Structures are given as structure tokens and as C-alpha cells.
Image (cartoon, rainbow, N blue to C red; front, top):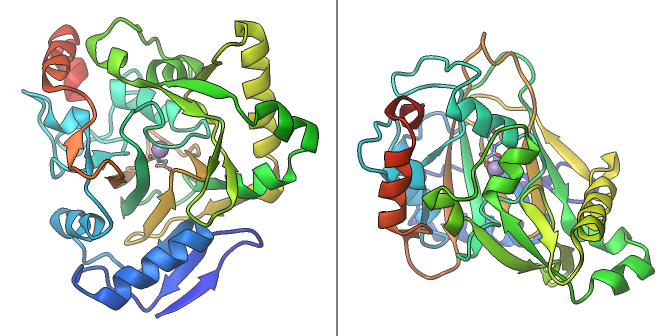
Length: 309
Ligand code: OGA
Ligand code: MN
């Protein structure tokens, strides 16, 4: 196996790996080491991997954070229950309408974010597998937030050193143009307070702000929003971005603690894009971050048609 850097700051490709054997100690150690340093790792040529093998590979790095949607009662899914879908496909594998719930979720994914930063359950990695890839566009972009933090002016580092922000899923959906009612049962659980500066696994400090960041604790709303937007604009400068051009069979792993990512546009109504994601968490146990009761209530309140899409 060989690790080859893909960008001057971060992101690497692991060459010569086959993820179908999670007992392979050399594979697991190589991935852990590469992730600590590069924070984004691409493994190509894994088209032979199925959903269960993807889940087994993910579990080698920690317990899963289970997706709420796939586990909800009465929700039909085309993929294994432990996986998140990041596709434009319905339960039958057909392209969904632009007004559907998953199309709106996909729009939200086009804002730079860290997965599940709105959960109390601390997220470690996301492991995304490209099953069907559109022939053009639909890249995934990543930002190295350690490099972003390092490049911030000292005055800004001092200003944010002890600040915390509240992250909310409903907030990022609204930012992307979807309506999201804060009172829906699930959304009450999809908010969490996070420090704006954290220590990354490499030991380097990192900025922790993304699309889910809604307000700065202890700051008035306008000032907090302005600060979040200023930090995001700084982070989104091209020198901090690695853009991944997908091939079918690619697996890309990213560290949600020190990177942001976003999907980019493609011809949504013309091409299928089937992406499946396993999330590894740091809480020590495999579970969904949302209590089962809130899930049930949430999906009862959404119409059946909406829930299925
Ligand atoms: C995700 C995500 C972006 C993409 O799966 O968490 O944000 O390009 N995906 O599909
Ligand atoms: Mn995401």
C-alpha cells in the first residue's frame, strides 16, 4: 500500500488497498495514520464492495452513528439500514422530483459543513462510497480547517479562542432554501453547542464552524451571524479546497472534526447519483443520535410520501 498526497495542504490517495477485509491490521493502521495526517483519504477501485462490507470496514474504526431516516418505522429503503443515502434516488432507485425531501437535503449538502456537528454524539469520520456517478460534475469539495485556522489573523484567533456556537440541522436546511420547522420532533434533538476552536487528531488546532452553525453563544444574533459568515468566507478560499472527482467504486473518508465538505451541482433530473455513507462516532457505542420516540413522532408528522423520498 502506498499513500500519495493529492493537495499541497491535505488529502491523500491510498493505493493498493482492498477494504473488503476489516481484519487486515496493516490496512486499518495505514488508514488511521493517513487520516490523522491528511484528514481526507480516497481509495479507488472498490466497486466490488457491497453495503455490508462498507459497514464492516467502517466499524473497524469505531462504532457507527446510525442514520435516523433509514431506521424510522415504515420507511422503505434501498440500502442497508446502517448507511446514510446521499443520492438523488427514491426507494425504487428512480430519480426523485426536485420538490422531494431528499432533493432538499441534497441542496443543503451543497453548503460547506461537517456531518452531524448538530449532534451531541461526537462524529469521527464519514466514509462515502460512490456507487453510481454522473458522467459530469457532482464533485465533492473538502476544506482543511486546520490550515484555515493556522492562516487566520492573530486578532481573529484571539477573538474566537473561547467562543462556542450552537449548530442546528434545521438552520442549515433553511440556509439552503428549504423550510424546516424547529418544532418538528427530530429537529429538537438535532442541535448542539460546540467550541469554535478544537484540537484535531493531528494535534493541530482547527476551526470548527460550518453550515450548521446557527449562532454564537453569548453574542447578539446579528454579530454572531456576521462572525460565522466571516469565518466561512475565509475558509472557502480556493487554496484550502480539494475537489474530488468521483469514479464509480471510489471510497472517500473524511474527518468531520477538522474538515468541511460539500456536494456540488450536477444535472439532477437527468443523471443518477448513488452515494452511500457510513458514519463512525466517538461516543463508544453504536446508536442513532435521536431517541426512537422522537423519530416515530417526526415521521408521523411528515406525510408518508415525503418520508419515502
Ligand atoms: C455527505 C455529503 C456530499 C456529496 O454524504 O455527507 O455531504 O457530494 N455528500 O454527496
Ligand atoms: Mn455531508
